Length: 300
Image (tube, rainbow, N blue to C red):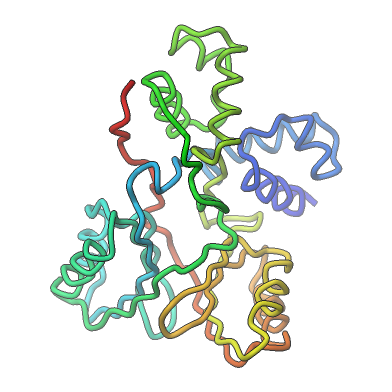
């Protein structure tokens, strides 16, 4: 029962990392006291951390890609190089024909080409396969819309973003103490940053233990009914990330579940969708980096 509640709470926090305990209680249909206890346990154990991420365009990051890497010999040198790379915001060891996957975020496609060329030159890298994101349909730390053109940040906004990058559930009172504003003024600022798409706050899950901590990547090839198929995939439970891509797959997804049986059932449901012509999957074995924060140069 606890695992099921944790799964629901993680999903709710991924949608809105700043949801109140009352809002979470309604979302998961559980008593507020139980919700408060479980959320605190998830945070204290390190299973979940809630962080804020600025819109990639606000950071000047306009080229995003999913990179699969096949390694000869030990993976540690390749992983260490990726961890040190500012371009790599997500790194995971995976099963299958590739050993490591990474998400890269850089300012331009020229920068992306150079980052991948540098990756190919790393000792132990046997091959690299790149998928360029065309359209991110669903993602905890991916914007659903373009950055609003009229968004303007001052130094206080930047301070709030940097504080929330470290702790996305920091209270308005604590944020007020750091900025010199009143709690109500801070509330208005934070809500505006979120509503304007400048900021997203969500849960990062450590893929160990119980409670929707198993994850699998899926690459999908589509036929003629691509829009309908993508909509059906998006509607499935457990879909944490979904994007249209250019490369060997038309769509990639990350799915999460409580057990390997549930992951298998999800992949079978996707295989059965009209318009899906092919599917490959890989298990996420261990996440080595999930860090989307980047210094903002916007100072008012």
